Length: 449
Ligand SMILES: [Zn+2]
Image (cartoon, rainbow, N blue to C red; front, side, top):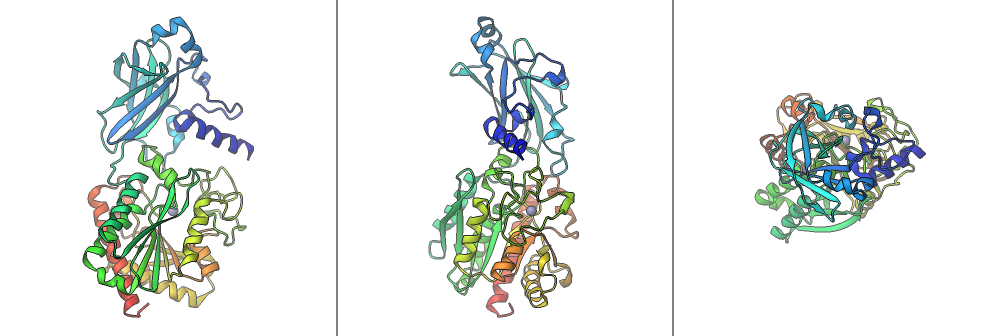
């Protein structure tokens, strides 16, 4: 536990690139790579790589001893940048450790020359020769000596992975375009202080809720906001009778890191807690889904130190307690896509009346997305202790679902699990979710739900 905390402290101070050189027993921003048999001290440290607007921005600092020496100044007249493309890296199947064993000796020298240093300490280099969809490892070095690195980065399509800034812009725009039916307000904040925003559409008393991106590397804003635009453009009349309350993205902190190029799947919030295991619903029950352990702080499914310990969890709970809703749809799966596979809480296994209610809301949405699906193939019980659906059942008595993807959606599944969701696929799913949502609203108005 103590080591886990020091690791997180380290990550917070040094960033993910530096984590590659982390030695748990000495929680310092390490400047050495003794394991590789190179000099114990590097001239450059803290290499970071971020993808911004289709380019990679590298930054690195002069390490303190070299900065102070006169001979060191000579070395910094020439900076070398090495790059290796990593086509074998696979999102959702590989993690940060993938990059540990890479060597600059197999990499391409893409720059050699002078770079201006900000404050005489910090060098930045922008690589605009990268390809969208590709993953890279970078190293930087002065004229002589061992390079520091690797820093790993994936250049993602900003239309497929929205930054928190873009999510906010799209939210505000929706409200500005439809001030008669859309309201937006702040309902809390993330661990790192980003504002959590709720969008309310319509004035009808009967209401459903949508919750996106509890897991950072999954889905939410890219599907929801365009689906709302479609409903507002073509079926606004529905919102006179029923309404939608939505949080497009909960895990904004880690979403930001993904949008800025962290190549590997990120799931937990900035405290390392799985927000879909943190709800006060059978929280004490340890779950071993995916072969992981929800009580283990090292696990990607860590439930947190206490029920509702996380600010994001509490914000969602307050939000759902404020205005009664009849069903909650939480968007999951991977890489901005989720489909017509709706999972309810496992803890409701013996509650036949509740399961019947779930089936109604799940099937309306799923068949709205895809009429060719078998009616009995959309819904099943599957979410664990501490999940949002479990809490919605235990506290609110309301059907709630994790939206994943069905085995019949093979094209989408093959692409999104390896982070190859492209614009045409995303657009197809935006349409499907608009259809699913509309089907639920129409069924509510027709009193079929
Ligand atoms: Zn998920």
